[in-house]
Amino acid sequence: MAEFGNHSGSWDGFANRVTGVLYGTCIAYSPASDGVLNSISVHSKAGSGTINIRLALYDASDGTFVGATVEQNIDTTVAWHTLNADGTINVYAAKSYIFAIEQSGNHYIDYNAHANHDKYKFETYGGTWPSPVTWTDNTSYANAAIYADYTPAASASATPSASPSATPSA
Image (cartoon, rainbow, N blue to C red; front, side, top):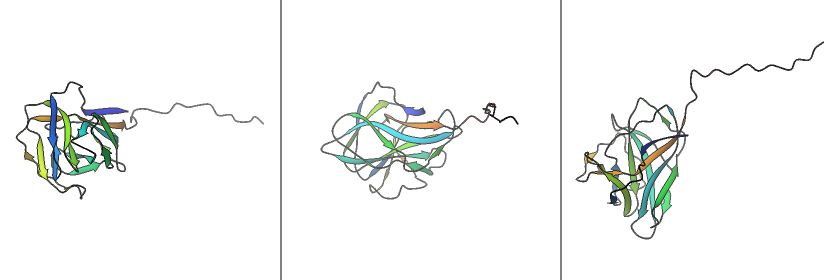
């Protein structure tokens, strides 16, 4: 397993994200190697009661939707919420990705202050993920506490070792 994203563990506070808005991270992240996405985790809590969240990856170069997680219900407990990938989603070291966050109610996400603006797009919760997405810079500089876990592809240079076969002698 390997990871890419923002999970430094030293947070500057919570950024409140509301329903009807798709949020994107301040910066793009790249995996160290090609692989298959297992899950995306976000360090957050519901503003009150319970809400549903979905997470996704977008290609940073052109805004193309790459893939998403299954939906998960969260409550007001601050925690790393890990959402499994919805199907097989390939990630590539040569590409950079924007993490997207969608929620059905007030969602407080831990963040680090960053020099770049985070992004948003008005979007109805639970619908089809837009592709391509056209982001608008937000007024905040909150880089969300979010990261992906993936399984690196098998090394192309690895060669299987020959093992002796048990052949009966005549």
